[in-house]
Length: 437
Picture (cartoon, rainbow, N blue to C red):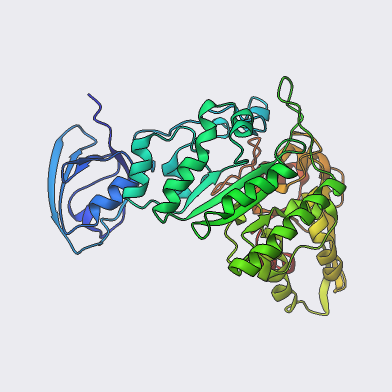
């Protein structure tokens, strides 16, 4: 019978675990009599000095290991998953859900909707809290599991029920109250939909969330992303230059107020709003400690600042002369235009910037991270790409040279007959180094 538990994926050489005979494929079912549901359980139980591990060997034997170690000393184990009992799935049908707007045929993992508070604590995933039980809230508070990343969208109970299509969605302020009283750190997200939760509703949400400062550490406002695969879904519109500018002005009023009260902006807009509106990205001091870069907030500022450092190493001239191509999404191209002009002042260097239209998801999707290999081929085929093609890392699956549609970097190189170099999307210094290499 399957007892569940933590499946060992790797053992660090020379570690306590290796000395104890633990191997990849073994399953640790309990520590000191406590069953392991997730990495949180494991970390709490393994911190002590005297451990009793109950485990099943990969070949079927049942072992009980007694281990003595220093407090907080690591056993040297890696696990196949961070939630040992599976991932708690999302029960919502959000009107703006991006997963519902994806075509079939992509990687299986792209269709997984998780809403698991443990993934929020361990990996920074955003959760709605609609499937949180009282017992789970108590566990979060008891173990002080923080920071938590919460998708709020609106604090209007009726509107949140409508937007998430879940009767439990209106209880979010109650969850926030308990978590804030317990001193947990929270980062909030608002996916802004024109005519639905913006305007007066956005003011209400920001005001409600600010009551929980300093427990609510940041509020990110990001524009809704819409693809061409929305048949039968709730009718939504995207932001344009005029409406994006209105959001910027609205947020600026709150930022001014919060800077006076709390010495930080508290509310942060996704870079896309500024790019849509054609406005300058705010200076570094406006982003505090950059709490939500994974949400597209402040990435362009980090890139621009690091580019300045890289540009200091630009020579006045390079020999022999060379040409390289830099391809990115439509939004990214707006941010890069001025930088490429600066690079092209170097004698003998030609950097060709190519904005790639997203035909796979639709042209209204403008971020580089959602471009597919086929989009890049379509946008670049037939062009003189020069010595190499440079692409930002956000286009690829983490840790793998694979695009969203399964196209590999190697296949792209073969199709375009050009070497491809991947550079860190957040590091302008690395971009300069990549071009000069």
